[in-house]
Image (cartoon, rainbow over all chains, first blue to last red; front, top):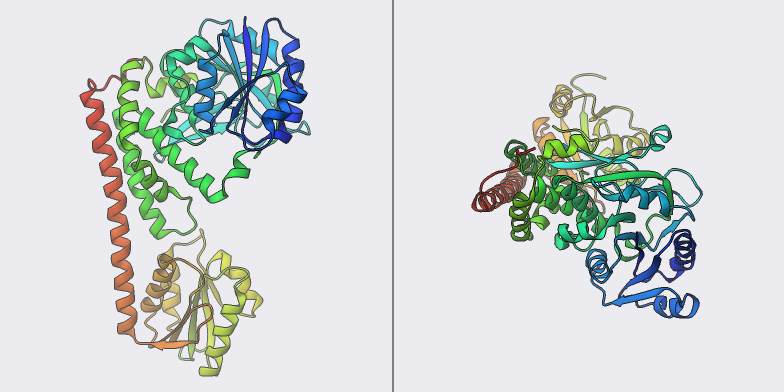
Length: 314
Length: 170
């Protein structure tokens, strides 16, 4: 299977020093695999570093538009059957590719996610491993498995973490890639996985494909915590508005969201949900358009998606 | 402690690191009412700083009992005075403290900000402050309902225009 490893980078020159050599070593372990770095408008010396130290790596230099658009443009320019997206703060193990590519040969599979470990080899606390979801209080609550015993089998999961995921390019194109509704970051990978399930495809978790994730690499450098919290909460709202199509849970979701402001008034120190609701309202036109489109394409109900992806329906 | 003693209710949401504000207010209060027995309604965050200041008579508002139970308990001590010490909290926090002060039926109410002098306020003035903040809270709630309502109408209408709901196909 013709494969491209795409490393997404924004001002991560120091991170590239580890991630690019690891990706090159992994690419050598399989046939017909190319490594490319997608530079999302870096202002540091990332590009010149790559040209001088890794001349065999293809560099796709774009103006800065954020993670999702950069991925979409890079995948659109690729001709490979299988694409692997990697954050610049992810260092892959040398043998991580063959299991991913083998899973992708299954006809029902759209994407496969890796097993995320901390750089020291311990299990990561961040979302990524064997993901699932549950609709609760107006939002899809995301879970990931932390029990090591349950992280040793290949199995379906709700979505593959965008930090290290492999997928079939023609299905990515059919899904339209990452949705820019969630710009600048977070929830685009959840949305992609959910939409793939909604079309009857599957997303898998592959424990034999190990990657090491240095958390907080790029976003933590560019945004303040409060901004990250608000954007993440806003995107959770947008995700629900776009994807939750079953009428009854949809009504319950909106009622729960109406109560958030009451919570904000009556209980201090809540997450920034009311603020997120207002921020989401500014993108409601786009969310409504995407929702209508989802409705046309969908072959599985929300309950069925969560049940099949190992989550909890309501 | 006698029921008719000069019970003074101290109200604050100050957290660790804001002890100076509480200590200043407490000092001023004790010099204004030297006979006062001070007790306080505390949150789990303010409990530590208050205890560190030697205030052991605390009614702690935590998950184990409702806010109403705490209000009743504070009122049952029949405080003759209430002192509100505002920290760097939001207007919603201030509203809660003022409601507790009113609810306690204390005849005299003092209040002060983090770096302000303790001032006595009339019940009418306090009532006006509560009314203003309650109106603000009501507006806030309406805004939330409006946001969710707008989202519901817009999303549902778009969905219906796109051909009705077909989400039960699985």
